Image 1 (cartoon, rainbow, N blue to C red):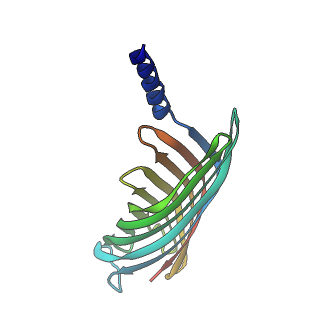
Image 2 (cartoon, rainbow, N blue to C red):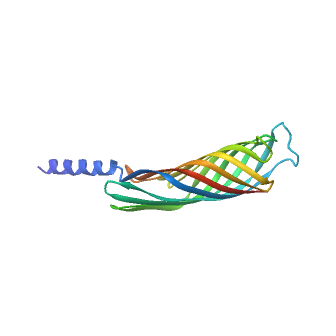
Length: 205
């Protein structure tokens, strides 16, 4: 009898650990960002790619909600990142790799309770830009961050256009997809996927 009771309790515990507490998608969010980048490179770029190295710091934010059968879920993600930057640049394109650290504050408030995580993590990504004209061109950027040995994760993909009214600053308008999730011991406390319009500003030196 004792063995049966213990077995039933273990099964219930395993099932609760393996279940996802909160999972949802939101497709109506504004995803702003601001970045500052210093990139050491030749003063005059040519058609041939040249080596470039530098640093970058930036911040992103996202807030929204979605509805489930048991009520409305609110979520928020504020992320700051500091990267080393290395890559190749020319008059027409930039190919950059990003690597560094970040700080994330992510939380989800559901009718069943609130989950969240704040802390530092390893950050990295890549960016590809193409200069169709000197002041305008498409770009793709992916960044991700993971903390507490992978217990929580955040990522963002941007696909859009980069507008440069001046050489030292630019504006980005893009489609963005973001995901954040926090793991417990054997399952996922929450996973929220967000799609929306990214509006960004980058200062370049």
